[in-house]
Amino acid sequence: MVNPVEREPIPLTWSSLVRLSAIARAAGRAAMVHYRTEVPVEYKADRSPVTAADHAAHRVILDDLRDWDPRIPIVSEEGTLPTEAEREAWTHFWLVDPLDGTKEFLSANGEFTVNIALIRRGEPVLGVIDAPALGLLYSGGPGIGAWKREGSQDPVRIYSRTTDGASPLVVAESRSHPSEDLETYLTTINVARRVQAGSSLKFCWLAEGKADVYPRFGPTMEWDVAAGDCIYRHSGTDGTRSSPLRYNKPGFRNGSFVLGPG
Image 1 (cartoon, rainbow, N blue to C red):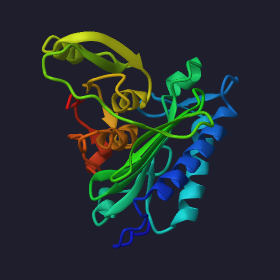
Image 2 (cartoon, one colour):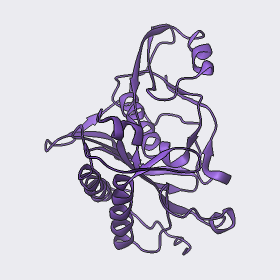
Image 3 (cartoon, rainbow, N blue to C red):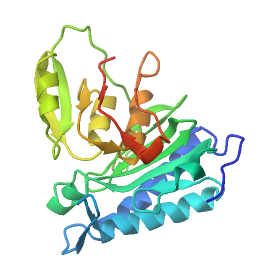
Image 4 (cartoon, rainbow, N blue to C red):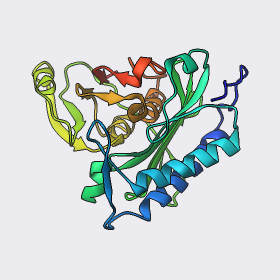
């Protein structure tokens, strides 16, 4: 795999975000060809499912990102993962989950997404999430803000909420990954209600103010969270939101994290 260039390879502009959004939507359309069909299911070593929809979205994203700038490395959940030695000198790379929420895809509840993020020196600087079955697209980046597009409507700027530290909080949680650690954490905060979502939609709900806090104590990989993390980081009305997540770690595995309130 090639080394990334030293200069800023992709400008962090609205035009770049529009182009990245178009790539995610194209991948979403490729996945939807297989939606609500008798699609064969394979299982990876970790017993997570993968389908023809995952592979179709993966191919679209790789082709389009390489057309954009072939010098930038691409790490995709459905691709061959580079070694730690290969990644050591990287300053920029694409981080991709072609179909996040394959379980939701198979259950046909619509809560699956296409996730693409550009990583720069350990942080996400462009992020797009497409939820094709719901007709929703979220995006964000530094100096651009966080945005939501419904269907063919124009994108609308979205903002995460801040809290006073005492008000009850709306908690976004995973639909498929409950945990005892989460239940323990929830006893330490004032919970107004709990809302469940599959895939990276929990980050989107946080970014648009539908939820106040997203605690995650089960395992995740970097490609699961990068795009949503980027959108959330740039959803503040008064500046960026803080995040403990970092990227290009050995093994690409995340520890537990809590995003918001902030």
